[in-house]
Amino acid sequence: MIRIRGLSHSYAGRKTLSNLDLDIAPGEFVYLQGPSGSGKSTLLRILNRQIDRFDGDISIDGQPLKRMARHEVRRKVATIHQSYELIERKTVLENVSLAGEVQGKPPATVRTESRACLSKVGLAGKEEMFPQQLSGGEQQRVAIARALLNGPAVLLADEPTGNLDPDNAERILQLLRDLNESEGTTILMVTHSSELVRSFPARTLFMKGGCLHAHEPDTGTLLHS
Ligand SMILES: Nc1ncnc2c1ncn2[C@@H]1O[C@H](COP(=O)(O)OP(=O)(O)OP(=O)(O)O)[C@@H](O)[C@H]1O
Picture 1 (cartoon, rainbow, N blue to C red):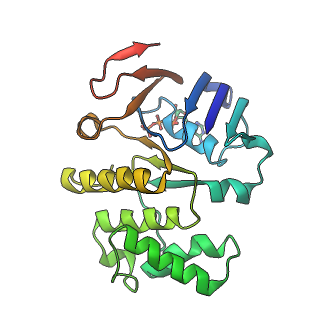
Picture 2: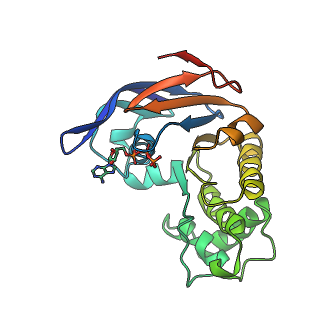
């Protein structure tokens, strides 16, 4: 599903990613850990084409990323962030609907699908509220509903629980794990929390100085470098 070969990237001559190779299978759930500044967000930004310039080959579902149109990447690869990135003056339903509107779908279809996605993340009944009227966990659920709207094959989650207390963080991770199982969405999740990784074990990658290492699921033991 995601195949990365020889991926390197630099910011102004400073290397951020060094010759990465990675395969992620369809429907897999993978954690990405590593110290601040090690290149985790850069890898995610390359995968969703926020960063266009890189060396090496990446394909998603067999399609070379560099040859995919931007709107195609946006449909296939959704991203959620630590800071939710919701529009304050729009309602929950409008925030989710935006993702369908930019893909040019008919408004009535978008509304119906948005309601269904909000229901999937446990927010039925909150459609007309505004982001500031919701808890942090609920705001992240809105962001997840928005990410799911176009049925992405891949969901990139950049520290999605970073602003949440431990209970809410676990609930959001549980939701992501449920969606991974029920929808078959491939999920790559950056997290600083080894506790969360231990509570829902899965393949864990460790990034250090722009290089990737693999960890054994649930023990954190380094396999190879
Ligand atoms: N727009 C930019 N211009 C120049 N350098 C950048 C830019 N964005 C990130 N960097 C640098 O690239 C390196 C990797 O950053 P990145 O954000 O990918 O790290 P990270 O592992 O996600 O860190 P964190 O856990 O703190 O989010 C860092 O040294 C950072 O300072």
